[in-house]
Length: 107
Image (tube, rainbow, N blue to C red; front, side, top):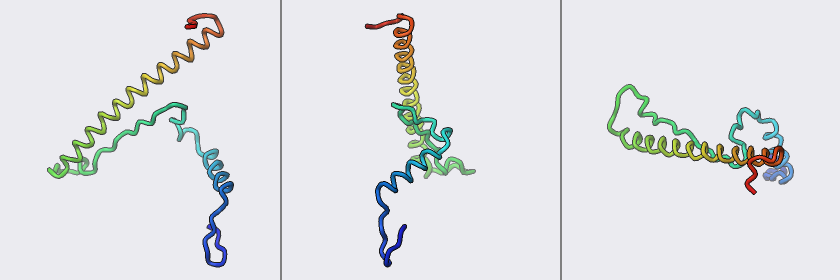
């Protein structure tokens, strides 16, 4: 923060955008595997801490039920994304073949 006479001054929006752009540009691409256009992020659920304990306790039942429900939603998300990615790639390949070799033209 910039301090001026004891008051906090907010940096200009252009400076904030430039800083954000620099951070994004410096971020390793391996850390952004899901940056593809149209990709829906499917977040893997983490098991509850009580499930990793040495002894099972009844108070963990609700957490485990919620975890199982999140696992099923995650699997459904992955299936939808897989179907979407295959359909998109097939469309791109078909369009390219149509343009390049006059094959598989849908029009």
